[in-house]
Length: 138
Image (cartoon, rainbow, N blue to C red; front, side):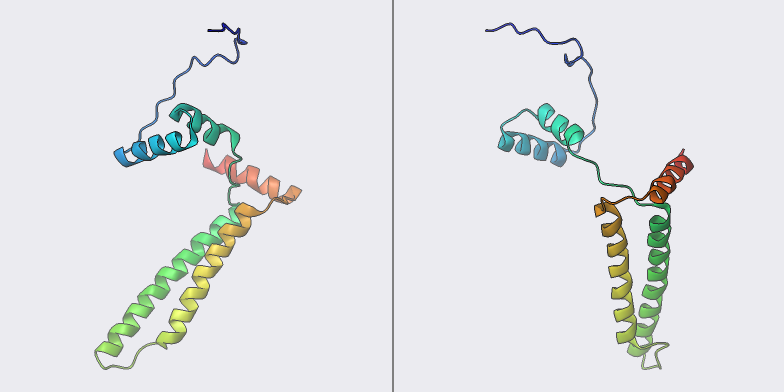
């Protein structure tokens, strides 16, 4: 066996604990076996070498949240409309229109999340907003 000297900085001497469910552990073992590497190496590659998705900006996050609240209200209105129809009463709103509006709302939420995380073009203003958002967390 060849004795290779490694730089002291490259020697792996730190342990990092991670809690996994039984299913997650089985998946990790399967993926590492399929990749032909240890679970540790797979985790290092996935955790350290892949770029992380970009975070949602303050504005996008707030819009996403607001759309969710509107969606909840629409769901309640749809339920009340469907209940009124079943009871033979006049519905408070057109059910087809409500369903269409609800689908448009869900599409807007998907678009906000997708555009903000896939965009590679960040202006200086957006970077400043992101810094403010990160500062608000702590």
